[in-house]
Image 1 (tube, helix red, strand yellow):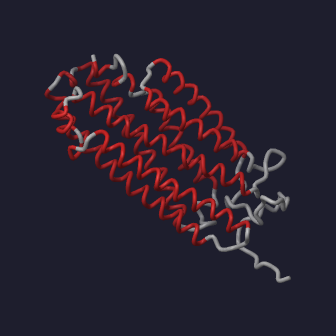
Image 2 (tube, rainbow, N blue to C red):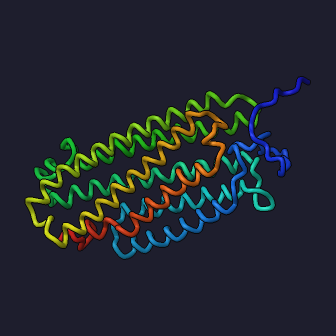
Image 3 (cartoon, rainbow, N blue to C red):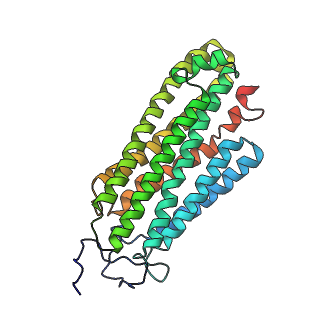
Amino acid sequence: MANKAPIDGYVDPMIPNPNGPNDAPIIIYGYTPHLALSALAVALFGLLLVLHSYRLYTIRLYAFSILLVFTTFCEIIGYAFRMRSSPPPVGNPYNVINFIVQYFFIVCAPVFLSAAIYTTLTSFIGAMSGENSAAAHQISPLGLSKKTILTIFITCDVVATIVQVAGAALIGVAESNRKSPDTPNNILLGGLAFQVFAFLVFLVLLFTFLRNSRKVRKATSLDDAGRGNALRMYIIALVASSLLVYLRTIFRLAETAQGVMGYASSHEPFFGSLEFAPIVVAIALLGWWHPGRLVGKNGLLLR
């Protein structure tokens, strides 16, 4: 029987490969994931899950809060499986199932976060226009309806995520079978490129809304000292969270563009600072400056 050709990749010299049925010949991550980072992520996302669950109960801006609860829950599952990829005795970094599951949940989680950001924009449009269709048309970017904004960008995120998860799963299968992962990586790259483009369009619409709403605030009581300052802080939190999500997506695109085992994908500090950190900070910002305080029942903008 002919021997399979060796494939380039990372093998931890301190951790022997168990060569189990679900183990790849290499560590697909390009490094051995550190237990400390995953444990920190589980702890922080656990705290944020409690925070957003509390906001859901007290403020009851249901769509937004449920999406953030799902986000934190998915992150916890993802990093829990990433912990299972840490060195023994806790985990096995060669296990393909752990890699695929952690990738699926860590990639899917920001989709719920993005959807929460989209709903925040549409909630602001509704609250600042008093749900008046003519005023909403004036404030909304390009005069798009709230439903149209949600439909377009949630659909884009779902499609992009499906393509990414499929690409990542195929990479795992290719590595397990000692085949080239180039084609699956190109599939993953296509999904990320589409997501980067779609979110850039959203950012353009968000800043267009901010320009339009500034005129409305100056002409109404929304710009008085109390409500104007509060509104400004919540808008800053929304913009900062959106930019952090975009930073994370750009990192994923650049990482994938370098190919499997590229420099960015094979060095965990990039993952920690450009995947984990932006998402945890974005969720924390939206937990502290929760938009329900403005547009929820008895919110500041509805008084």
